[in-house]
Structures are given as C-alpha cells and as structure tokens.
Amino acid sequence: MFILERNLEVLKGGYERYMETETFKEGIKKLEEIGEESITAFFCCEKLFFRCHRRFISQELTVRGWQIYHIVDRDIFPDLRVL
Image (cartoon, rainbow, N blue to C red; front, side, top):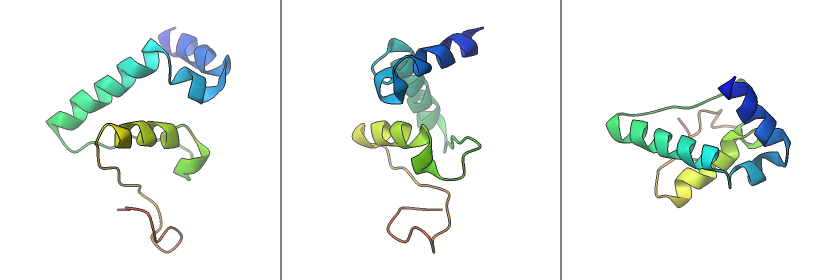
C-alpha cells in the first residue's frame, strides 16, 4: 500500500512537485545513509536517466555534494561522468 500511495502522490503534481514532499526527502536521506555505508547504485527500467525520475534524484544528490556516475554508453554521452 505504501508504494501505491507514493505513486499517487507523484501523479498529483509531477515529480518536481513530489520532490517537495516529506516522502521524497525521507527517500533521499535513506539513499544518503546507504551511500555513506558503501558504493551505491540506484536505477530503474528506463534506459536513459534524463527521461525518468533518476534525473531529479541525481540532481538533488549532486546539490548535496554527492558524485553521480551514470551507467550509459560513453560514445553517446561523452561529457557525462559515466561508468
């Protein structure tokens, strides 16, 4: 039920609006906690990060001082920090 409620919250105003919610802030905090413990990856089924919610998450983490590496084809995105 929690996942369904969270998805409905996103649909109400788009992901940028969702980023202002406590649910998003708690999720970012959890990612940071995990990242402090070990090298961490997060992903979804969308191939291109800039076409899904990962772009917003990576932007937020970058603002907070995290180094973000995208797992994409270097030939397609030569200017990105990629793995």
